[in-house]
Length: 135
View 1 (cartoon, rainbow, N blue to C red):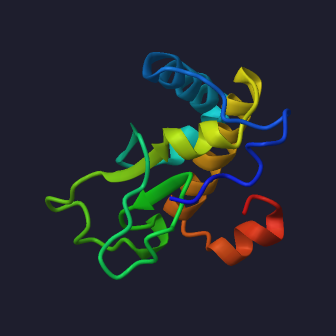
View 2 (tube, rainbow, N blue to C red; view 1 turned 180 degrees about the vertical axis):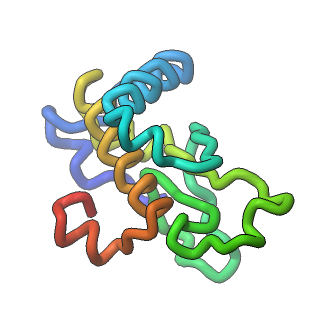
């Protein structure tokens, strides 16, 4: 993975935070998501991983802050409930810490990332998220 070009600027990361502290920050970020939105989510698990590992046909320098995997609500039909595994949202710890310079920035970045991935759960595309300022 290439070095973060912002890391040399004092106000940017990497911010030092252990796994337990990051998990607590993730919980704080998720708590910021309005209950009305969380209530509408259906069968979604949220995980934290160290970093995204690009697949064999992906650019090896791919860096993601988060990833939604599953079937968006807009694409589900009557068959979906029959034995389907939960959708998942994974938040990637190391890339988030690399762009943050404070605890509050970490919580903010996790919040933005989780909102972005939840939007995919609701069927909102990356293009639309960029238009809305959540890209």
